[in-house]
Image (cartoon, rainbow, N blue to C red; front, side):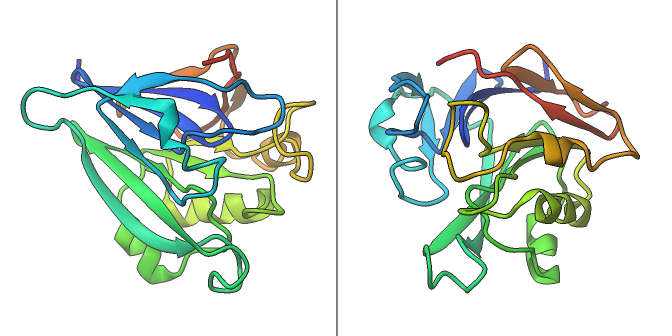
Length: 209
């Protein structure tokens, strides 16, 4: 089927699958409350190379036969609100397949300029950090989502009890900000993007790796 399967592996790490091809984004190590893990994929991408986003050793690369299913683009941003002077650069990745687009913000640390919004382009699903401190906070994340016209908005990089960085916020403030679209917390770590979705905010549940 012409869809993209999107699975949350914890923090900002995701596994995308489409047409038999798989991609892992921002694999981690050393994150409080999250297990060390190993997985396999046809490719791995990192928004930046801190250990909680750039631990590529967690991913065994397996060959993919045929033409790549995903087209991958990047937009350069910063890991902080001071043009990278605190934490360096950050890449937004845009993963496109079957006319669908999944936008992974990495550790975005600022609001987007008009030029960056245009460069990202179509956004069917947005994977956006919401926890603040290291990244944009809940209010800024909503601003980014609206600027991009994101249809399905999925928060990441937040704290949940003893899981995640202890200095970042939990998800509830972000989830409470939306009154113009359905907001749900589903008991699954996976969502399938088909292109027929109505605007919505979806919080997934970590199920292990």
